[in-house]
Every structure is written in C-alpha cells, then in structure tokens.
Image (spheres, rainbow, N blue to C red):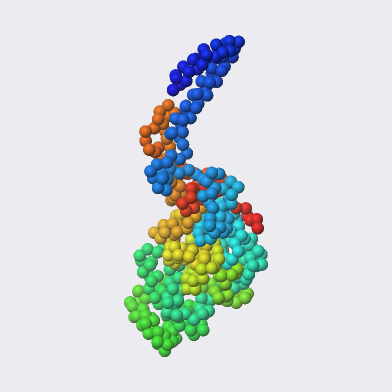
Length: 480
C-alpha cells in the first residue's frame, strides 16, 4: 500500500511539473512528503481500526454478551440512568450516579477509606424516608441527627452509653408473641451470637438453644415480663412459671419442648444452657435509658423516623448480638405487614461485627420488594466470609451495586473485584498485519493490586449489567 502511494505521488509530481512549471524542486519535495504521510496514515488507520477498535462486535456481543469490556467513561454515562433514582453514591465525570430505589449496595473498605464520611453520612442526609443506621462510632449519628430530627422521631439505642445521645432501650417482649414470632426471635438471638464461629457443631447447639428459648419468650411476653426475667429463669434453671403458663394456655407443644430439654443428659443440657446464656446475656448490658424502652411500633418504617444503633468498638461483639436480633425482628415485621410503599434506608456500618443477622442471605434476596434499601459496609470479603461462611456469596450477589474503596489489600476482595470487572479484548496484531480472528486476546480489565493503589476519595463501582466505573465519592454534605 505504501509503495503504491509513493508511486502515485511520483506520477502526481510529473503532472504537477507540467501544470505548474514555476514550482521549485524544494517546494515539490515538501508537497511530496506531506502527501505520502497523509496516504500512509490514512491507510494505517484503516488497518488499525480493524484490529484495535474499542469494542469489536462478535456473534456474542450482538446477542448482548460482551466478550471484552472497558471501564465506563463519558460515552457510557447513559448506562447509569435509573428508572427510580434514589440516593447518590458518587460521580462519574459530571454525572451523579444514583442507586435505583429497589437496589442495595455492598461496600468493601478498610479503616480510613471514607466509607462513613463519604458514603454512609451523605446517603442518610439525602434520604427522604425512614432510616436505620448502625455504627461503632458516634460520628455517623452526630453528623446526621440534627437533620434527621427535623423529619421525624429520632431513637438512639446506645446500650453502653458510649455517647451522650442514648435515650432508649429495646424491649423485645413489649408485644405479645405467638408461636411463630417467638421462634423467629429466639433464632435471631441465638444465631447472631454464634454466626462467627458457626460450623456444624455451632449450628447444632444454637438450634437447641433456640428451641428452649422460644417457649420462654412466648410465656414471658404474655405474663408481662421482660427479657431480664427470662435471663433469671435461665440462670436459676427455674422454668416452672413459664411451663405452667404454657400448659394452662394450651401451648402444649412448647411445654413438652421445655420438659424434653430438661430431661437430656446433664452434659448436653449444660452445653445448651451455656450457649443460651452467652446469647441472651448481652440483653442485660447497659445503662438506665432516659426515655425508657422503645417498641418497634414507635419506629414507623413507612414514615421518616430514625433509629441509630451505637456501640463502642471494643464491645461490638457483645452488643452485636442485641442489634442483630433487633434487625431480624425489624425485617420480620417488614415482611409481615408487606408495606410496599415504604421508603426505608438501612445503613449497616461494620455490619459483620455490629449487625450480624441470622438468615441475612435470605433477607437480602427479598427485601427490595418491600420498599427497603440497604447499604451494607464490610472491611473486606474475608470478614464477611468469617461471619456468614458460604452464605457470603449469596449476600454479595444480591446487592446489585458493589463498591470497592481504596487501600484494600485482602487477596479475596481484590480477586472478587477483578472477576466482577471481567475481561478486556486486546489485539496484539501490528498495523502491518490484518487479524483473521473474530476477537483478540482476553485479559483482566482490573489488575490484581489496583484496588490498593486507588486514590483516596475514589471507588470502583460494579453495578448490575453496567460497565465497571471508577467514581468520585460523594461530598460529606450533599447538595439539597
């Protein structure tokens, strides 16, 4: 091609000499060189476009499956439009990236990665509806409580008094339970405590402990007693009051369950009571509440109430049992009443330790249908797997948006991000050689260590079917 182009130029030169005889040899040389460069670049561009295009259509891509992907840029902004936009999670260029109202986000970020100040706080300030937020520090609450108090009632559940804002305690027995609700509450209490180290043996003891606890909770709720009274029954191994109530009110199956447990071998019974004691004792921890006990009826999840769950970092393991059971009870009520018009935002900071929820993999798969949006924050994937085991995969998958913050060095988290970003097509053929293949070589779009080097204030977003994007996190105080 180049030889033909030069040959044409020499022919053009002879013709030019006839038409414009006054043209100097030097000027003609300049023209000749410019024409040759123009033809060379034009021809090379044609060859180059055939092999080095950004996206080369294949049979798979025409079916909607892209074999090679790229990071989103200014030409992909329309991909991030949503039908029901809600809170903003950052910006891509000048466009604000918003979650769809039915989508939840899972966030991975180590300490000092701005996950609280530039994700959790802006989301709470921007949301118009009910909010539940957990945090091991008071900064999330302090930055949002004033704005939230103008929208509805604010409840601060701070059992250990780590801030001066705590005003209420949760009484899980404030309403009369039935057989099903008492069973679910017992499972929430027993399983949230044992999730971290739960193998088959841990699950076995948690199941037996919940089987004993459920009848006690049911009886106490009808007798007008508190969770402290239930703890007393367990400590003293005195279940006569509960058993008499169950028999008199025809809860015979529950009465037999207590009797069968007490008839077990002493070593087995001791293990059950030890598991139960470890699970329920955190409910007795705390200071005297200012406003007394609150009921979940007080928290209108369909309105604009706010519930803050606060615990200090060094006690989050104990208090996490209480918060996990409380959140399980909240989800239970949400599913029971089926208020689809609800606009409830749940922000779980340090979710693995402070808000371990039994059956969270099942909850996250259905919660969006009930008007609930979650932002669930973990330090890394290893922490999530340590808490939930194999269910961690389902939990990640059912958060439509995955957000990875900078400074991550956990190998499992980096590998997850790399796999979610997918592969890009590379065409190694030189511009002198035409490719006969349908696609190029596939390589990972994201280098394995790229997350660790991500600049502070930026994040990798993998959201549904959209291309992966590097976004700028929201400002601390979002614009109204």
